Length: 358
Image (cartoon, rainbow, N blue to C red):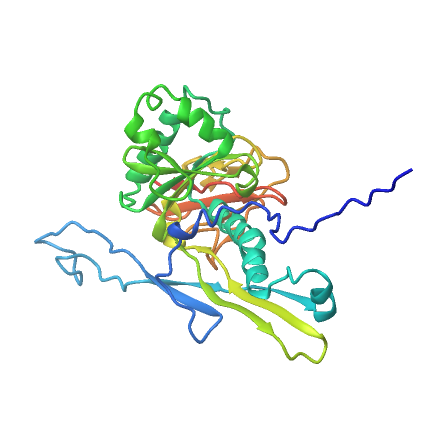
């Protein structure tokens, strides 16, 4: 019986994983630099006390009112993330594998397939946790409700005087389906079909809507609107190198090191709006501080959530004056602003609750 020896062929063209580039890079901000340091301190100046000008002031008081020294606040942002890889291509393997492993191409592959999605997910999580505005634990959005919800979110930013330029609405791919099918958009070819930036599917209210993979968005978040300069997102170091004369490897040693972080600025947290259907701690609620007892009471419907608050109007998510709520506390002076948020392990932080003391 004849014998046939059939050939097996190894292809030199690799089967590489999909990658889509960064969805967040365009919406990051580097308005502050970390050159020469791993932390920065940022000043915020207080606001003026507005008085009634009077021609007959009290003795010892100016017609302009009592003198108040301008107060200030300092917030610290420390860069913590340092990541690396250390991979090798042994020359003995290269010689016996058709020379398919190329160091430069491999390092680019590592960066595109693994590092970029990790950085995107970290930024989105940081922005969500630092958001000042939002509708938490809302109903699941549909094609009939998504556009109104996004326009309502933009109105919330407008009411906080967030600049109109440089806003972006991030939606999950699941929500992108509902967005494309929305009656307000599905017949608007100019809005739906014009892709301007990576992932953009349409514009709503003049702002780009960018679809991102569901697994990059924090759990339960259906969309997030971000003003570009609401954060500072340093990429302090990106080093990729191929070492050909390493003592430890007969071949090529590929090393990568990158230092990065992301911070929501204390005074710009209202430049981020979060719409969450689940997975986010409920925003705290509270009384107006005018009860007979003169106490301020805070609460949160998420079981076992920890509430932190400030009475000086500062951002409780980052302020050094933030206190952990345990019981009703004495109402601060009239005109004060109590701000509070709630957190719980493995959940996204709540939005910030504000209470003006009458």
